[in-house]
Image (cartoon, rainbow, N blue to C red; front, side, top):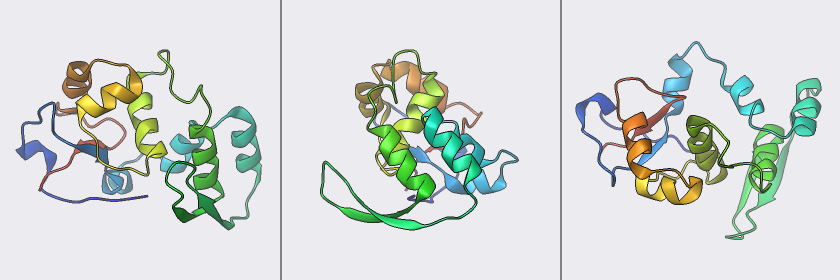
Length: 145
């Protein structure tokens, strides 16, 4: 998972072209459990299997779109497989979860609200207003240079 650091997001005023990402440093400082939240994005059968499995292994994953090979643990592989399911992001998926899932599916590559709107079918302006306020939702923050 890619981590990008920069100036604190409170120092900028995001626009529709500002890139956002999941800030994993925020998760390290949060009282929330990232693994539990990641498990909540899996298909039920994947979640059950991973919840019972205490051993972790690393496998090669070939991105079906780019052909890029990356090494993933069981949870990372399950997320990539879940992301290929057509029900991973639907109009009924909560906005914050939808945006988080886009970043999970694209290996946390930064995207603007305009780009996120294309993936989620949500309003770019609603996305901007949600993620540019003082509250940080699930570590989703603007990138700053």
